Amino acid sequence: MKITPSEFIRTLRLIALSGVLILSACAPFKPSERNAAPADLPSEFSARSDVQAPASAWWTEFGSDTLNKRVERALRRNTSIREAWARLRQNSAFERIEAAALLPQLDYSADVSHTRQHQQGSALSTAEQFSLALAGSYELDVWGRVRANVRAGELATLSSAADLEAVRVSIAATVVETWMELQTRMAILPLTQEQWKAAKDQVELMRQRYLKGAANSKDMLEQEQEVTSLRTSMEQVREQITRLEFELAVLCGDMPQKDAVDMITYPYPVQEILPGLNPLAPVSGIGIPMDMLRQRPDIQAARLRLQEADWSVAAAEADRLPALRLSADGSSSAPHLNEVLDSWLANLAASVTGPVFDGGRRRAEVERARAVVDERLATYRDTILNAVQEVEVALEQERRARARLVEAQRTLELREQIYTSQRLRYLNGNDTFLNLLNARQSLDSGREDVLQTRLELYQARVALHRALGGRLTALEDIGNMGAQSSVSENYKGI
Image (cartoon, rainbow, N blue to C red; front, side):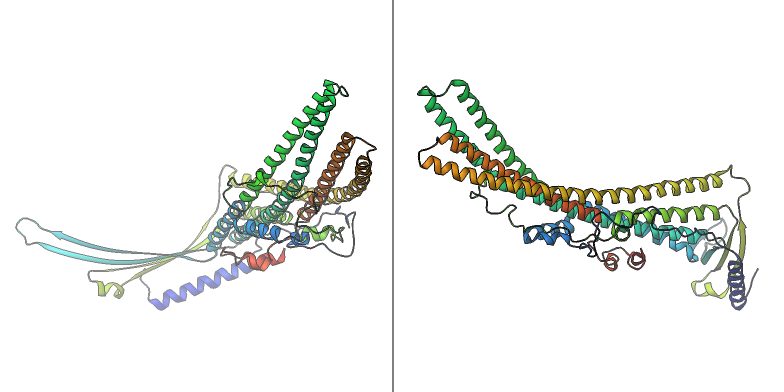
């Protein structure tokens, strides 16, 4: 059918108006709203107060510029963060692929042919033909299937953004934990060195007593065994220092390289419990569980995936109903290029397609999508339960570690007094050097206990920050990190 351009445009407008009227009369499938907070969520944690703990850059409370630089470097260069960022970009691209179905699709084709013909007894003839064609199609999203798929894609992108933030929180906490353990081992190393030296002195002293008949061979052999054991412990500490340095390098995205860390020695006695760290203040407040739901990225990711599954159910249900599609194409051909647009042909069509018999495939897809919703609902609740547990456990660990630290420091003070008294007795000739060495070893052991207990206290505080899941990136900045999607705009609302 040949029609004029004005008739073609008028017909398109009529079809578009009809589509709008159909859409306004239909009720697209969409999931119902869900309550973000479970009904049995506790109103407060066991350490509830009116002051909320810091939600970002929490590691700065430990007062170490070196630690701050390590964490910042890891957040820029860690390979796990880069992997999560690549997954975010993939989902962002998939979201745009789904969104393209909301717009009409227009394709073109152009052909040029040249023929030469020669028959016996006739002259050589040539012919050229030029053709141009346009074809467009559009699905009227009557039941909301396309929009449901688009919304599911948006939520998948947002959940990937939350996953990225969860990885960043985890990497920051791991860097802090590793760095603290490294500092502790570096402080313990000189203590093990002094214990080893004191044990060697005891062996020499006991050998002299053995030669004088004041000690038996069994006592001397046991002391030599103690020297060997302390030597092994000292080497283990050196090995731990090297391992922790390597782990920090990998966390920061650097190649681990052997250096001279196992040859480092420190002045004795140790002047600081953890070098470079200020005393840790008691927790001042951690907010309420509802705050945790809003700021823990793994909980947000689980909730977003649940919402994505809800929209996938809507898309699967809409796919069981007929689909209305519009199509239009126009073509023109001529023997000369400048005559191609002089004569053209246009066709308009509307089609309705729907399932008659598909062996139950679409119904099974709806059941599968609903099962995914049930799975993700269980995952979402499990994530919340684990999060509450992690916070409560971290609070309890810090409380107990603080109590143990008080006891360890009190024990250390008593051992310092005993060593001071034993040293005066030895200098005055009222006691033996062997008893002085024993007091020295007991003092070194007490100092090591304080270091280890202080590390446990810091680890509990890091575990608390990890459990609270404070964000490291402002929500409005996520969309500016490279993904061309609706992440920045939509992420503000979760």
